[in-house]
Length: 124
Image (cartoon, rainbow, N blue to C red; front, side, top):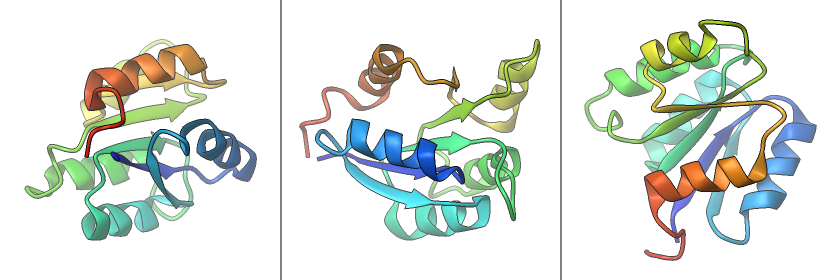
């Protein structure tokens, strides 16, 4: 089973994502960017869902640090964010995000992006 790290500080959003994904993926969670970086280093998940507005270290910087780490840089990071102004997706990609989803999350689009990066979710 593939592992997804969700880095999200809003408990409602985190709970929603966990409930949505936990049947198909092993889920790890962190509530701030620093914890997300540390957990990524320890667990080496298959994919990271990264909120960009996070406490301690924001998602932009957390993504930059993960992508600067030679061991972690190949882990796909999908930005999950309410930042939907013109240019925000480009800024997220410039920070190192491999893809981008705006909130509220479109479940079908989320699953399509997960399949793109992870396959069907059932493989080891």
